[in-house]
Every structure is written in structure tokens, then in C-alpha cells.
Image (cartoon, rainbow, N blue to C red; front, top):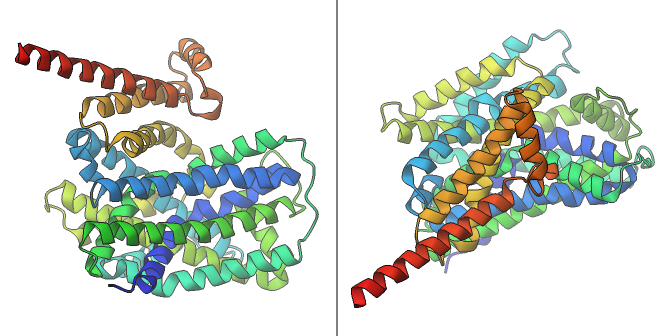
Length: 438
């Protein structure tokens, strides 16, 4: 029997570090600040979309294969490939990777070296990412064994010191328990972790195979163990950062900078050394995520182009495009990401949920395809709304969709269409059996 503890820790730490990037660091304090005395409800909301949902993504992939594209066997290869491409653009060079560089510059470099040019920094940052990403087989070990322990240590110091000596008392912000939960639930989308989970799952599973876990049952157990370890670590850090945000005493305003808030908290908790500690934490958090995402994008491009673009070239292309977008501010990247995520998230989430609940009992592809297409149609309404296309009819449709106020307008329609398609498909099979028996 294999000793699973050591590999599970390595894989779990690696998965934690892959998830824990720029958004995961700057969003929780902002959520805490907005929630005030209702910070615990905010932790629950963020836990749902920022931890549970990504874990379900990992679980779905390991249940049905060793990579996200393997889900095509249960749904439709073309649809899953297109969706994988959209996901990779979101968690790759368009949103997530540029945001890691922008956050590192704003929190980790600018406070210490105010005159340092952000373009020069982006070049240096992505040169390091390329250097650490080209050895594809060692990515997980580099992240899990070396970078993550330092990341957890630096964040742990901030959280523990802040909880022991909170800089202020939580304020009553006028936001209710339900509103705090819903706000944090929505903010959890910005972590991009549901999208990343189905890609990161493939990296972790591949690493488990490299470590000798070739049996599907052993592979399932070690991947789930890694997922649970990463969940515990994420909950500790998220909960602590939300608590610190609630107790920060930072002045409320319409244009709160998430990065400035994080710097304020670190300085209040750790004094003059706070900027150094948080700079170190941000650099590690963003670097580990950028390495994982660049590696994933390089692997995807190699597979997507049938090796016309090899892994190393794919990593370089990814970093060049990411560097171009990374010169924008974190707030600008978050703003333009909203419409992209509003379209891709529902499609991915509907695929994860339908496969997770029904993938082992419904074998026809039709219901799964119907659910994904329905989610895509509903999600396209948010795109129309963002660009003010057909604004009145779109607003009327949205207002009639259950849960649309929580950005879950796709949920009931996609499941409803799934059940209708499954029922029709089942009825056809019974009809054909009846004809054949006659």
C-alpha cells in the first residue's frame, strides 16, 4: 500500500497555491469591509462559490477522466473543446494571468519601489514565469514543496496576528445577513476558481499518475485528499482575510481600491514590516498561480493544435499576451472580466452540476448538451445587457428568470431543459423497444 500522506500534502498544497492568486488575496478583505459585523455570513457566501464550487469541479473531472476534455465523452467533444478554449482564455492570458502580474506590481512592488516602471516589471515577472514553467513535469513539485509553504507561512502570520490583535472593531454597515451572503457569493465568481478547477484537476491528476497512482481508484482517493487539504487551507486564509477586512477600520467610499485596503490591513496588523510581508505573500501567491496557469495554457495549446505549437512555445505565447494586458490596473482587469465571466461561468457550472449529479445514471449525451446550450443562451443575456443590446426585452426576460438577482438565472432553466430532454430521450428508447418487440 502506498503512503498517501506525503504525496497528498504536496498535491494539496500545490492545488491551494494554484487556486490562490491575485483575486483570492484582494477580494476577501473587501468583502469583509463591506459586510462589517455580518462578516461570518460573508465567509459562508464566499465559501460556497470560492471553495465548494471549485472542489466540485475537481471532483467532476476525476470522476469521468483525467482531464477536462475527457468530459466530451459524456457530453459532446466539440462543445467541451470550445468551452475549454473559452475557459483557458479566461484563466489564461486575458484575465487571470494578467491580474496576477498587475496585483504583484500594485501590492508587492509599487509600495516598496514607487518609481519602478510597470512595463519593466511585467517583462521581469513573465521572464520568471517562463523560466519556472518550462519544466512541465516538475511544476507541481516546485509549487507544492517549495513555494506554497512560504506562501502559507507569510499569510498565516498576517491572519493569526490580525485575529489576535484586530486593528479595529467590526462596523455595522447597514447590510443584512442575507445581503452579506449574496454579496460574497457574487464576489466568489471573480476568483475564477470554478473555471480553473476543471483545468487544475488535470494537472493534479497527471502529477498523481507521475507519482505512481495509475489505478483509477487510488487516483480518485489521492486527488480528493488533495482537494480537501486545499479546501481547509483556503477556508483558513479566506476566513481570516474577511475577518480582518471587517475589523480594518478602513473608510468606506464609492471608489475603494482593493489593493490599497490590503496594504492598509497589513500595515495596521504588522506595522512598518506589514508592507514587506504582504509584498512577499502577494509575489508568491501570484507567481504560483501564474506558473500553474501558463503551464496549463501551454499544455492546452499543444493538444489543441495537435502539437503544431509545442508546450514551451505555448507558454511563451501565453506570457507575451498576458504581459500586454497586465499593464492595466487590477480594477480595470476586474471590470472588463465581469462580462466575460458572466457568459462562461454559467456554461461551465451547468456542465459540472449536471455531470456530478446525473453523469453516472444518465448515459445519453442529449440532456447534457441541452443543459449546456440552455445555460449559454441565458448567459448571453448578460452580454446583451452589458453592451445595451436589446436592453428592454433582455431586462424583461431577466426579471422573469428565477434567481436572476443572484446571477443564477441560468440554473433552473438549464436543469428544467435537462429533465425534459432526459424524459423525451427515455420515452423514445421505450418506444423503439416496443416496436422491436412487436
